[in-house]
Amino acid sequence: SGSRFRMGLELTVKVRDKDVPITFDNPALEELFDKLKQMKAFNDWCNGIDEDFVVKGITVQSIDMFGPRVGFVKFKADVTDKNDIAIPSIVFMRGPCVGIFVLITCEEDKKQYTVLTAQPRVPTGRYALLELPAGMLDDSGDFVGVAAKELREETGLEVHQKDLYDLTEKAFGSQYPGIYPSAGGCDEYFRLFLYRAKLPRSEIESLQGRCTGILEEGEKIKLKIISVHELWRAAPDVKALSALCIYENLVARRELPADGLPP
Image 1 (cartoon, rainbow, N blue to C red):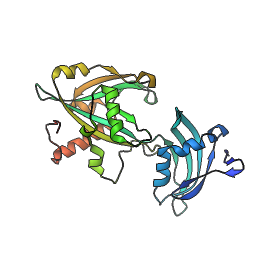
Image 2: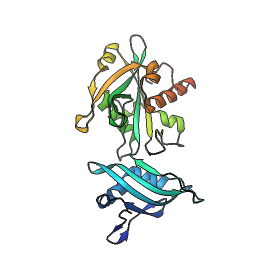
Image 3: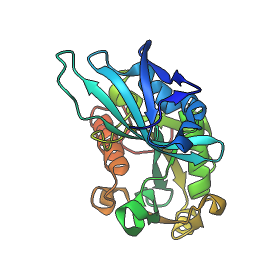
Image 4: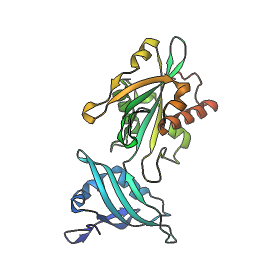
């Protein structure tokens, strides 16, 4: 059993206003307890978990720091329903992300294109996985600001926050905060935004193959520009396919214009 006492006191966290014991698989992790309590994703989970769950304890197995803040945490919770039946509850917690569906209309021929990033993704074993431009949310909780920043860093496109259209909010309202790609083991969800632009062909061609990303953050990104009609089979990316699905449904319902032009 892991460490659960600090100076003789049992460590607890508030889960829906109830004190729940928290233990750590090794003493070094326990030193990060105060940092963990500052992690927005962890607080959101503790405060927002459905009341149908009964959380009896949490065991922290690993923590990865991103500079001064907790980036990733893996924990196992002791959770049952109200009939005391155990519920699988191993969590890899990393918090929410943003993804941006870029829709570019060519000024000359009105053809529509989208921007994908190709970058190394070690967990998949793929060196150049095609995805929508995306990024992790920081503790500010500013989805739109982070989306604009990521789009600038990953594509070089300068975007004003007012030009980003929240696809997930349009689809789900306040019922869900975003799209959960791996809900069996991870808390991560995506907020998806649409950015529409009209560019000359020369500018669209100049984006093709451009190398971007923040090298100090280990980002090694190459852009790929494809016809929007090829997106459904070009990228095995849940962000891209989800954004396309919501966008096409909004166009079909005439809530977005079919020409894809910026408002």
